[in-house]
Image (cartoon, rainbow, N blue to C red; front, side, top):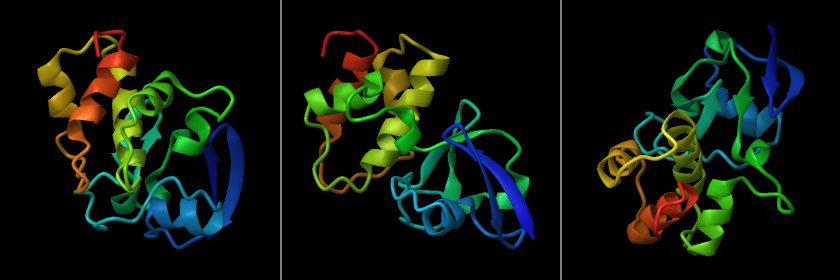
Length: 152
């Protein structure tokens, strides 16, 4: 069935079954590879995108229920004009293997949009559902603090 989505400011009509995970449409139909397939259960955060201003797990939401614009990491900023969170992650060298970074950046950007000056506990709580196996947690925390204008 045809489904129309607004992704990164552009409208797209795709053919997908109602229960197709949004992640599959983003990656397979729209060729946006920022959101990653991690666990497929909405528990690791690798597939995080923004639905409106809220960070969601795109692997566990059916495309048929999407009723707001979607922003992926590709639509957050550009190489020439990165989003402040992306710039902070680069400055702090917060990425190692890169697999979790999509979710970390998207979750952090949503947090800072809702709460521009979070404290350390609020940052840690927001990122608690994002798994990183490389151990860059301290650099990620520094990057979020930097993006929030706090002392890194």
